[in-house]
Image (tube, rainbow, N blue to C red; front, side, top):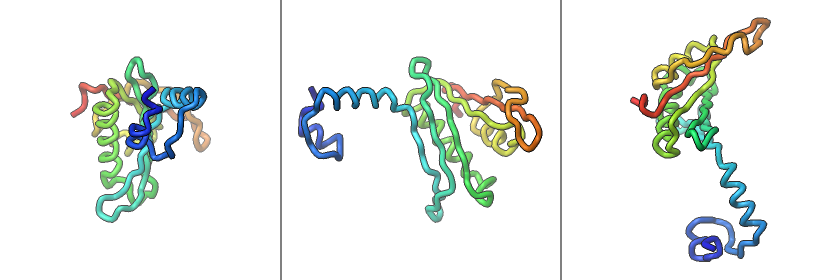
Length: 153
């Protein structure tokens, strides 16, 4: 098997070269199947500060569907375009690198800034989960927003 080729191992892996046991080979293929999470950190370009994180989950390989999560940490960094830029990059990554067809994100209906950001990138509200979130003594709606590959601007 190709995994046993030491020259190839040197090119693909930083681990020490060693023979592949049947158990190790099975673990490798099992992990390939679980390789569905793509997390990224968000840094400012000007001063290289960590300000947030985003993640893409490849949910359904057959239907080429993924979910996205994003957060900009400190309030002083919100509303400055960082989230919009990071989301555009993540959406492009999902469509162009992972060859996904559809992406979605959930957002609480009261998070108007996030909704505007998602709409700027091209997400559309597809589903309203009525009163699905209990927060501060009130039930709130949760929105599912989606974007298709052909809608990418």
